[in-house]
Image (cartoon, rainbow, N blue to C red):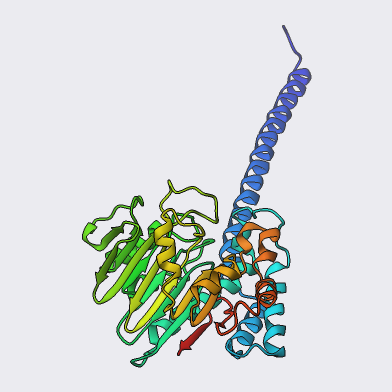
Length: 361
């Protein structure tokens, strides 16, 4: 088709403008895409900064509460001590879901932060404390976690790193013997115990417990009623169920430990015995110096064991949500014991907040 010069010029200009428009459109699309990617990258960067900052940031409320605990004497159950116990319980309950919290809750929560701070303080004390002969020091950590130290030995029960925490880690190097009562996640931590084995520490399990190691000679699986001697520490296991569920197929035990002139009993979550003769044997001992007992242990059982000192444990169980948490507050446990004051007469009861310790006798 023939086009005049003017028409041709006009057609060429139109094609040129279209080309420019298309190129502009492509450039604009690329710019939008870059901006979107950049926004996404900025969000990732901000989240990457926020996540660790939120983990390591400890608000003043956590630090103030920790200092109050440091200044308190757990052996004196006076008005000020009871007020602190209430403050601690209220602090942990604030914002706690009624049901099991989702795992990410523990990254941000003040429940984890105050617990980590208390445990780290306790571990530092364990590392630096020298105990004179004839005495024993007891630290209460989280749940049934406890450490006892004499002038010769350091022994830990049911230690587990919880909730993205590394608070317990140094214990793997400074503790001589670790005992595990059963396999619940808040009593048993395979990663932590492997670190302990790497540090050439001894680990004690009930027979049938599943745990492997590159140093099997450091692992001891003891049967119910069996006593072993490790570096002068006598340890006896007694098979139990879990919180009275009647299930004896899963390994679980009470441990009686005799160390440097002291006799301790740690109950884990056990309640009922598989072997009733062994149950009778334990309850007839009458020479237990320290009972590290689950707070659900009935006052009649405490009375029959008749320890010199009873330290209730598995307190402030916030990892299971609000309902079980309230049952495990010290005020609730104390109230129950007061109802059985006559039965528990003569037994010293010490209510330790997480990370606290007592020197005995």
